Amino acid sequence: MKKLSDNIVDKISMDFLRNQILKNAYGNTDTVIAGLDPRILIMWYLFFGIVPWFSNNLVFLTGAFVIVTITTIMAHISALVIFIFCIGVFSQTGYLFIVSLLFGGDISTLIPLAILTVKVATVSLASITVFSGLDPDNLSKGLMWFGFPEKLSFSISYAYRILPMLIKEFQNIMLSYKLRGNPPEHSNFKGKVKYFIYQIKIIVQAFYPLMLNTAKKSRTTVEALEIKGYRYAATDKRVRKMRLSTLKIGYNDMIFISASVLWVSLTMLVSTIM
Image (tube, rainbow, N blue to C red; front, side, top):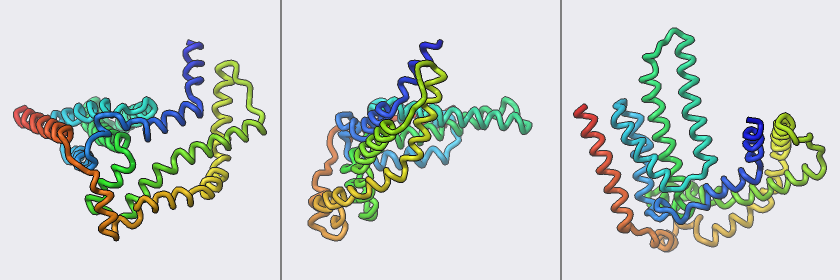
């Protein structure tokens, strides 16, 4: 048991978190989901992100949850994101169930809580699938095609590109604190916990240096995006046409949307029969 706990604490490191974040943002370009047209994925997300909130049919919600689970597996989501998703969804259900028991509820409250949990899980997995599987360029092009403000697509592209810079600057600041600081001994489990708390304190202290150092380099990133036509694509028709010329609905897109429509229709038919 002690060895297992030590291994778990060892896994939680800045390098591990950095690799998981970068993998989730940039490491899924070779998946089936990443190869789909962004317009198809955005429409698919609008359905599975909105419709489940207006249904209380457990059969339909379960069917929607099954298909978004399959697409999440196809998108090769990082283990850290799945871990945070599981903790957030299922801990919320347990918390609400305990609160309902304290205020006079009984075991019957599990049914509405189960419906709420499936709704939240379905919408969350749909969001994870789309925004982890889509390349930032394709996501901004898809939003631009639907007529979203150009500042929105520009901000999304900028946020994706500033992410590696933020992580690199954060790691450099953490290394400087490590050179100047005196971390606690972490040879045993108790010391590892103290060391983890010590790292959290350093993370809080590193916030302002991180913002200042990143602001110095953000101008270069903005200029690079402007050269690629992000800012003027909404006002200049030639730039807009050039950027959107790569969007094409292919054979895989038709299979994906057809399978989704077929599965949703089947679950709705079963839900009406039952």
